[in-house]
Amino acid sequence: MIILIDMDDVLADFDGEVYTRWNKLHPDKFIVPPDKRNCFYLHEEMPDESRELIREINTSEGFIANLPEIPGSIEAVKEISALGHSVFICTAPLIRYRYCVKEKYQWVEEHLGCEWIEKLVLTRDKTIIRGDILIDDKPKITGVAEPVWEHVIYEKSYNREIKGQRRLTWNDWKEILPELL
Image: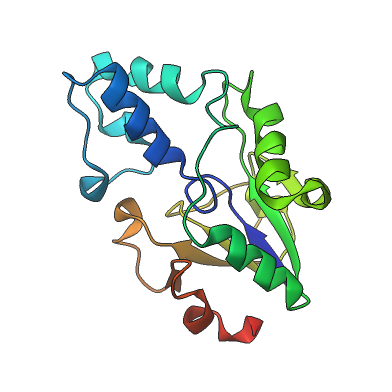
């Protein structure tokens, strides 16, 4: 099988790092708590005056390269690959990409190894990428094509309302995707 796995908030803790940096830089300013999030894009739940501050954090040099791993993600990806599946990291670069693209490559090399660089797909439209399964935290993935993959949702507070799709975390992926074993 061809397994596509999103990077931000599935393998790398993008939002967690935003919260860490926000609390250091702006401890006196409101931020929606992680478990109360209803929107995929954090800045959409913030007051207008805070939106640019969020963007300054997540587009800063070193932000992507230094994201911590989601616990269990790297082990799971390597295990899925070792089971004989073709696994690709399928990730969308930020629109403000000055550091993002380079740092996504750096992150993958550091956390998964050089051989995974060839398995990194950067695209703003995941619907045009062929695969059997896409594991992604984004609630709804749209683009110019009808996806050929099944969207398996990586569990987050902002996608909890999505029904009718398989959902997983790295703690339960084997039960949710038994066809991979």
